[in-house]
Image (cartoon, rainbow, N blue to C red; front, side, top):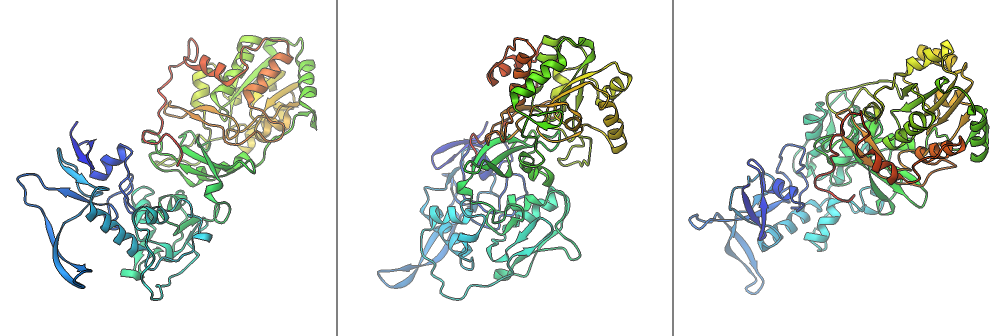
Length: 542
């Protein structure tokens, strides 16, 4: 692979890479505002300027400038190298590039930074971007000087609603055009553009339109400053109080890689941010996925129930033992959940197939929904492929309804509470579920199964328990625990282990690592596991 030198470091690159792309792949940041690895090159912020050293047989490219001489107290003519934007300049073999080691580059970056801040309002105390703003970071790294302009700054519109989700502050905008390029190139909805010239520039929404497509939250994500913010997160939290874990979006079978931000003081999740993974979601997420973090707190089942009444865990387990003691094995159905992790479903498989020894296997989950050709998949469950890999014989939920209606199935042990059905099918399912003598479920959220269940053991959400999910491509991805389990909920694999012991069986797992060790091959007769693909550049949440 060809290489070049960047500040005396050897940087490998692929043909066609620019300097900043090659550096980015090696985890080296060249300061930038307008460049983004998933968007076209604009080269308009000039923050990524670098010095290209000429080869031995080349004449250096220089510029004649006037420089202030503090001794003579006058300007003098000098030459300086012509700096190049690293985002636009292609890497070539054996080239030498100076970034942090060039005094010319340092002066240029300080000048660019000062220029961008001339009319920028000093409203960091009330700006949601404070704490993760490129203007703040680069001022500390490349400027560190007081503002010299004493004139009144240019004032522009503030708190402009671009649509149902996004607010725009024109005074904070550095005109990087990332948002314009995203909606043009990725979302394929060129709804934003730039008007006026010079320091009167501002972003605007196309006349007669709102910013209301399925990817509006990415306007906030690609903005390097505080110009575009979401109404959902606006004034809700300060980022320096938030912690982050690597997570997987639960909204659909795409399984977008994310950072889940939470405040441990309140045991509450506050937002999702996309996490780079070229094989899954690249750098993006859809709006539905971005707000799906709320499911960690909304419509939750948090306490055990027996016959519709809140009880303790011990009472619920004892009730399950009484109802299932001595019943015929072939009258018991095991219902796996496409909304729960591979570990949860594995524990249920051990209980149903290995310990109880019933072959009646079914699966449930949320019904199909909207899809597009960008990221959104019609399957609204994060682990359908995982359930099918784990239990190939599992039949759809409609088959369970038929078994209950015919009386062949009288008892149900289920994961989750959702059923993949339309309203008509839901009515039929409710009627069939009403015929069951016993339904024992481990739900995170309310649903048809939860409503019909005689015994409910609340399960922790994906935000409260680490788990593995298999997306529609067959890629296994791990989601880490963020907050503590709410109410009396526990990880479903743990609840199932307690249920197994209550029923008189010897459960072979007590810790998550016990299950993950067994999951490494998924067991004999199951589909092979695809290699887990993670973020190729980042090892920690920023």
